[in-house]
Length: 485
Ligand code: MSP
Image (tube, rainbow, N blue to C red):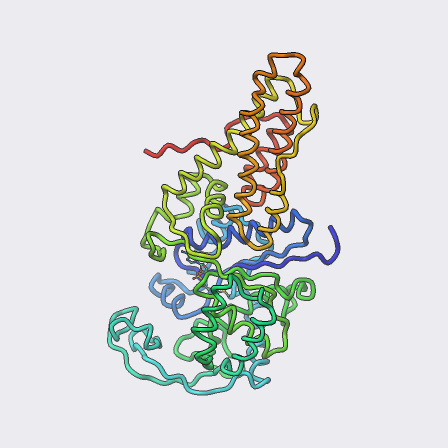
């Protein structure tokens, strides 16, 4: 491992809703693939994920469940079948997991809030909004449903509360300059256009960063009664988890600024405007990249708990296999735009790419190697990659997972074609062609090994099984064809 080749990648920290669906899994799988890929390239990787545990919604959900917030959260985050279990099942190789209720984070956020206040970046003002008395919640005009509370459907009234505000309005120019001078800061390009036209050009507003109408948040220690706005609490996780303003960790100098924050499109706004603005206010280095990926949708609509089993990652992984699911998520949809999730697509992908192309190549090649008594090094391999390896790496650096996988599967197709073109079963009938036959088997096995190395970040378990088949002579079906009843 070379010194100072580091790579810091994050997923958003997830809201502990009762059940995460395949849409949430999407980002974690993509970040995991990237972390594994960078490790395989010799980088010292920090892969951070975690949970965003404060706010009125959690306070209410816990109350409804008859639990304290922390009892409620522990069950969903670290309980059986909870978030950490899901990441284990999906083989998410995170290096660190932060919960925003962790003591070190809470204390650090209090210091950060105070530092922003001392710098004059935060001031005390009055928050005005629509208030639902039974729910004790403020809503903006836009959040109301038919002019009523979106949670309980009752009347709301104009109300005011004392609150702290962050001077976001002062950062428009600097953020535009950031986008101009560092075009890579926000990707894909379409997200940048949206941020500029929808938010920055119309003028940024100061943003309310404390609340007094509920309790479940990090207390502002110099003004009792106020709790810190969830997004201030949440965004700084990316730094507190490395030891910023706390003694728990000591990796800030090594990993900050972050190489990339992977985030879903609806939270790009917070990551590409509020986040850099707060960092600017504290004279801290900015992350190098924010990548706003698309959503997985069901027939054009956003997924939710109510869409049930079809999007339950536990059910999907159990039915189709973890690696097949991981592969599907990143091969079927371009990462930067929305993708329509259907079971048919999933089954077709597994059958065509994994069973017919990869699985078939491995089983045919190994069966021939066994039958003809030949090994990888017995002949001279022809290079079937022809530029695809370089293309794969270039695509990975751009988070173009779909294109990177297509590069590998092109090579696998070539290898399958190589079998048909060289007809090893005919070569085997002629002792004079033994060397030619050995070359064909070598070519196939070397190609399988090369492709497996590239596929390993996507399908770690299956890649391990292929290597066992190559190295230890183990045999077995890798990807059974799926026949839907
Ligand atoms: N807690 C905030 C993030 C704070 S980061 C400092 C949050 N949490 S979330 O649980 O609601 O969403 C986490 C991530 O899951 C977001 O990036 C969101 O875009 C992503 N997804 C939720 N549903 C999704 C799909 N259907 N498809 C793809 N990603 C989706 O936001």
